[in-house]
Length: 94
Image (cartoon, rainbow, N blue to C red; front, side, top):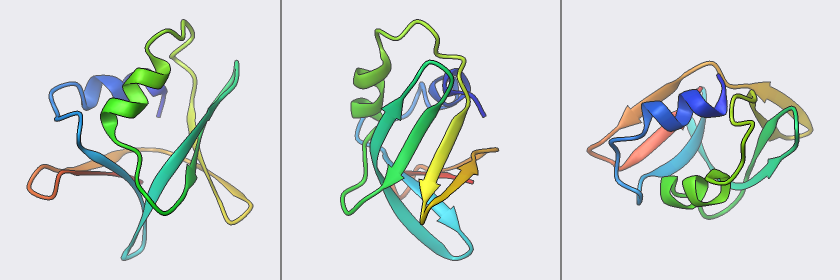
């Protein structure tokens, strides 16, 4: 999945929607973003990043069609899709 895809798919959601990584039955909060010229890396943490904070961080970046990866336990995981949970105000990246 590319950063532009994530932004378009979540465009109508509240800015308070939290981002999580879904591995099996576990939901891990995604707390940090690192962007380079060829990728967007999301890192787990204690407090989840909100959609509003993510949009604010990437709004001035021109090359937003970069792929998204999650760096968890020294593994780089490609993001292939999202699950939107509006009743829980969450987005789970898979």
